Length: 330
Figure (tube, one colour):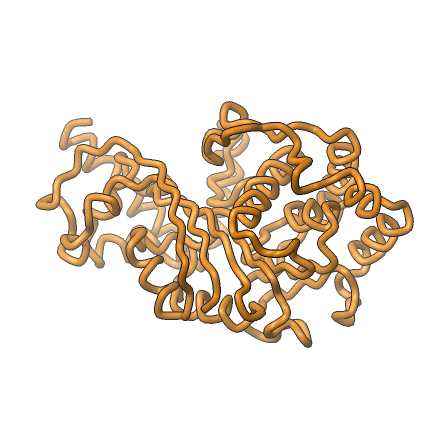
């Protein structure tokens, strides 16, 4: 891409930022884009049964690496429009799932459809969807159903008809939940957490969410508060620019003013925090025993091309496209 094309690309992104100040026009343009291209322009991934199954299995394998006991209570940061990943966890035998989001945009019908599909996947001991089906989720050493974790005895209890009925009832009554069921949903969570959640979780996870969080220190501190002693967490983070720049990591070349113009009035965007910043925030919040699994991307950027606030990025920061960070509460 030559310099002129880069300037045209940037101008389009700034224009899109300006349009966010006129929500009605933005909505019309996004609907038009979806009709023409099939893409909505949303920064979130549309959940499917297969995707939720693939995501949970990867977090389950991350948990297993820690050697901890099977989690009884878990929490997800940013489930989006579906609790599918949490439902997959419940179908493995997790007793309680908390979904924490900043905005309530739950799709009840989607939850029902995904739940029904997940039951069939677990009953058939379906293999884990691979990196060819979901490249962003990364490769695994094996895609076989993890019977060393999810034994026949465990799955028999987890898929008991009465237990499935209880999950289904909880799912259909989220708005009337008293906090004592198998599913708890808090959105916006900063206005009030589920009673008793503090210090009750064995495991916390997120999937391509932490790159959107503006207050990283605050959210990692919240994770620390929610966990039991020695509890753990796994976060899958996408460090790509989310189409805000031509190069996958080109958003680190933008100065603060340019970035402000691109963001516009969007409440939900990306924070541009590099890998090292996430790790530093976790350590400050009281986490240790970190394991970081990095997926690198090719880059043509040099330190001189970076905006002043990003000139201190390490080589690992600059080349990390995706990362899975596993940490334990100290």
